[in-house]
Length: 122
View 1 (spheres, rainbow, N blue to C red):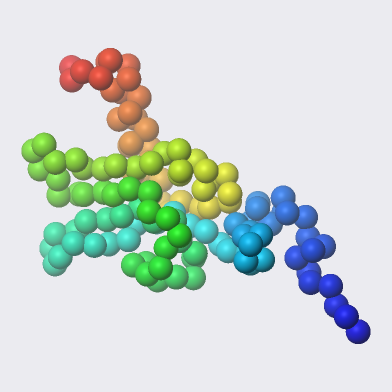
View 2: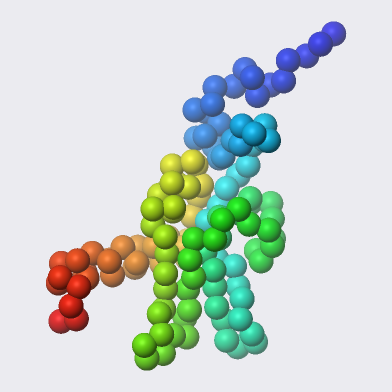
């Protein structure tokens, strides 16, 4: 008997609600947006990664969305996050970690604060 693959009978909108379905590979991935640690001992530096949930924290990733430097001093940039790509991946069914949620919220407030003041420091 020939069996039809299950993925042909499951509607694509159902798969996207639960994660990310790659039609080229024909695979279903649970996608997360999380922080991957870099830097040296006692000097953390993080990258925002879109990754398969099964991969290790600092392992293989699909896309890098930006960075977060918790030890930024003076004129150094503390955080950069590509919110357009973040919105795209959330639309594909990705889930954000708790820390990424709080940092994205902070970035959104920072961007809206600069727009309301005309981009000048008050």
